[in-house]
Image (cartoon, one colour):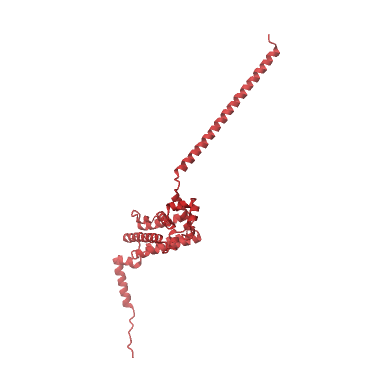
Length: 285
């Protein structure tokens, strides 16, 4: 027979083993929970890493040539063409100097490509979009250029103006490019002004070619003032003055187009001449 003390001891032992089993199970469950959390964390990190990799992959990396052109545009804006050397450009681009001459035989040819990219950015061809009214087209064109300035806090002006100040016979390719594009700009702007004159939205007495040259020169001055004050204010002055000039019809033109008013003005002029005192000329003695 088993003694009572032995039974008690066996019960205690069994109870202890049960507690150990329960502790082991709780420990195992906790470990499984920790494992789940760990796996979730790993999966989350992997997902983020994969998403970042996909976004990075979607962003096209610049080629060596594009890096050089982009760095040159920044340097030319900051220092001008003459004060900026090839070494400074490749340092800013983060490429070896030898790579420069693999793509460009001379700095002047690089400048021509930089200017080509700049002309694409300012989108002067917006002026040829006949689906937009002439006045809105002119405003939209200059507003687009203003938005490019805004990206740099109005501290970076017109690159064309930078090059115009440095044009010389020693850089014929740059000179020819700048002159040709400015002439094209003037022609597109003058053509748009004539369209506005034809549809009655722009004052017809204005000389389209002269006004086109005036607007481009005025825009260059406004862009220079913008850099000085580092704000859009000079550009706003340009817009307010330009469109009050373009849209303001002259009294003589409105009179000429209105036959009733033309007859009324002619009658008033005759009456004025008739009422004017006549001064008799005395013969000399």
